[in-house]
Length: 271
Ligand SMILES: C[S@@+](CC[C@H](N)C(=O)[O-])C[C@H]1O[C@@H](n2cnc3c(N)ncnc32)[C@H](O)[C@@H]1O
Image (cartoon, rainbow, N blue to C red; front, side, top):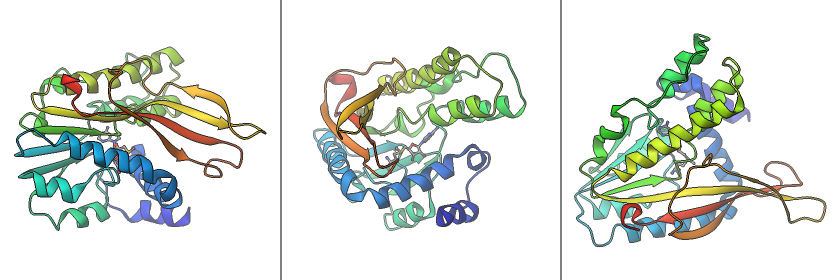
């Protein structure tokens, strides 16, 4: 914990993303990956294999990865060797990722808030506003940025992460919104990302959790709770399914495991 705190203190990150908690989340992800490496390995392999398949049968000028993060689920060497240009988009890029990317002349990093509402939500909360919650701007879906001319766009375990920090801010620091309003806000963010992906001309590969499941209880492996991380949004039922054993005991505590039900869709708009 002390090492994570120190890293947070010393890692450069644009404000207000640092204050909002994006850097902290990424540092925690790195630490959890270190602790749960073996349990995560089958999941990461599924992701990388699906991405490699998604790159087949299309032009190879440009690929854009949304939510590139720490690149755990991304076969970077493969993408850099297959496509002329690789663009990695995230709200924060840790120094370790910046260093790794320097080895590839055709890989660039882009820093972008893919919800379109992060800073507006931060301002809303900081100013103690109580009115309608920020909505993704009109051009959020149409302004496709590097994705517009990409042959392949990969949404890499990002979809359900998008609403978490904005929603957490509202719940912790903001004026009290009814649970339904916060959930509708989260759902809008998810729908907006799905609309964005649906409007892209190139192939879109979607990797996402579709359900969070808590297992545990005295006898070990009973299902205790199912949580919908999509807030009621739906994605096509097609695609490959697997389990991401994201937090096996004792990661959260000695009595429960958290597992994600995963879907990987190779060609979202033609599935
Ligand atoms: C579960 S992690 C997956 C990371 C990455 N695919 C990997 O395996 O290392 C989710 C990623 O989404 C990014 N993210 C969350 N909210 C974002 C936003 N509003 N805009 C851009 N990226 C965001 C996080 O920074 C994080 O890197």
